[in-house]
Image 1 (cartoon, rainbow, N blue to C red):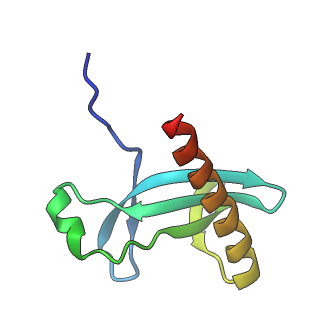
Image 2 (cartoon, rainbow, N blue to C red):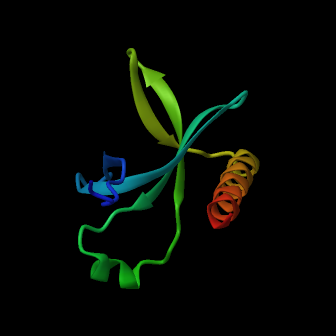
Length: 98
């Protein structure tokens, strides 16, 4: 049995047409909508050394029956979703220590 971790990945296309791969850290669904919390994915771990460590939160919008990820323009909403993610993330860390 393999204990190798395989992350859930999603590829986004930048405004410049560049494909950027992200690991899905969390999917949050609440009364405000559905949100993806993403972190840049590096196939080679050494490449992540210079990464800023920032994660990104996108809101899911349905366009022609398809889900699309969009930036969140409302800073207060972004802060609320970030707080939910950080609470989830920290509780998972502490659960893993038990």
